Picture: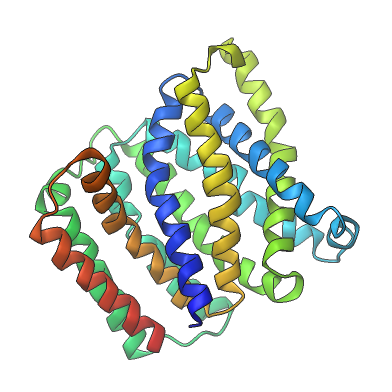
Length: 291
């Protein structure tokens, strides 16, 4: 994998590692679908100046239907299910389910893209999974609560499966239109059809934008600019440079980054568990790259 792709993935995963905190902050005062609509509108505004000259060629491309489908899988519907699911399940449940994302990508890419699942790749993914579980600790596994969280767990799992499909089918389009073109088109299309959904939720709940606090606006802005715009663009840039299986395994760096971020910013202790788990994740990622 080129160093450019590695750097892009590490930055994207770092931004996504912070996104869970930002989402929780935004949801304190803002309905979930309104959060999704606003983050997509913000990211679409960021993309527009970059692709204004390519808009006609991208939207007139024969892949327009596929772009719309990708917008469902990776923007509005994906974020909507994930954000709504977080309201009805625990953070521990959601983080444990996220471990399945690279495995989903591994299987789907073999099925739809013909990417080989070699013994080295499978070993690398297994080691990375173990590393993530080490970082989370036994308390995360023991805190898994199935009772009373069925709806939330189901929504989170569906959103993860959708991201796997988004990665695999996005890889095909990236080879045709480029990372910037695909990411921009998918985001803008997602924002266009998600905006009315957000307005509908506001009317049904009687919510007004003026009720969003500055703290929540800051969180939504980060989700729009840092995650939906920059991180997704970087992720697709890496997809254009490597196999989707090798890109997907980098998602396992998110839990160690989240723990390290909490240690640096919140003053939490950097434990031996974090160090060992992170080393296992790095080993797993390296083996998958070479598979």
